[in-house]
Image (cartoon, rainbow, N blue to C red):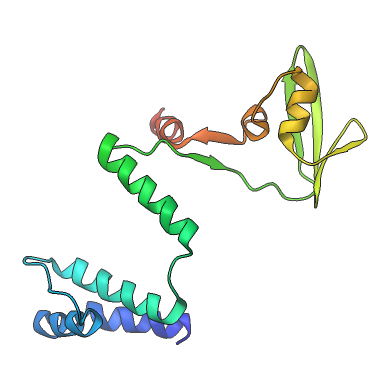
Length: 156
């Protein structure tokens, strides 16, 4: 089923009367008992989930594991302290000032160019610049905890 048909089916589900929606839920989850008091929007979402899973496949195990960790972290602390990393396209120039010197790095398809020398990672370049181990993406400001991103987006 192409994605447009899936979207149309989800739209159809959203407009079903509640008894018909419950029947669809039972069809999508034949081996489960419907939780009591499941609100309409969750009925639609869980049916849509099953529909997409059937048509497009399940999550890869690594993604499932990551989502479980994030879920546990959110339940425990009420916030997500994950890092986001920007995707760097080939040709992008990164600038970083360190020790009073501005360092320029160019992203390549298969690594980075710094001082006319190829490096496999930004971490190697950060070490070259500072002489100590660094997370390259963090050194070049490409990673920032989500909590800081959320705080900065609410400032001002």
